Image 1 (cartoon, rainbow, N blue to C red):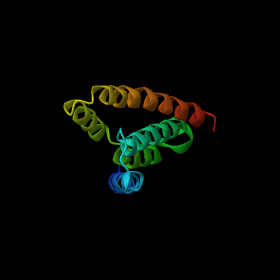
Image 2: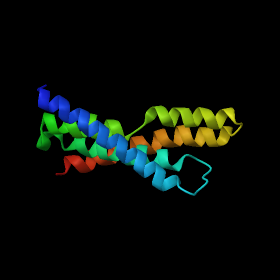
Image 3: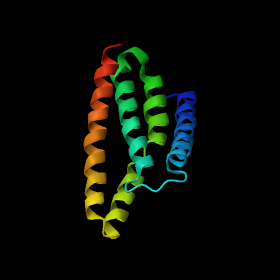
Image 4: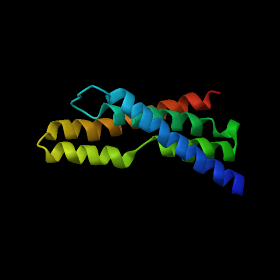
Length: 123
């Protein structure tokens, strides 16, 4: 990987993280949800977009896939926060919400990724 590609992945990761911070704040601002809706939204949309990127990889090329997939989507999505929020729900006695959050996010995110890959291969 060239130095420019490496730098591009790093910058895209920062952009993805900033987008996650902004979107999570916008979704949760002034609202009280039973589940971490911001994180759910981010991980599901990120899974779809990563699927779309990888599905279209043959048309995009290796460097754009690395920048968009590893960089942008890697910075945007947040498995660690989702895991922590699931544990937090369970530790506060909200075991049903924890199960719905953990398992639901996994199932829906995988389905979103599959949909993205399918759509990406149609291009």
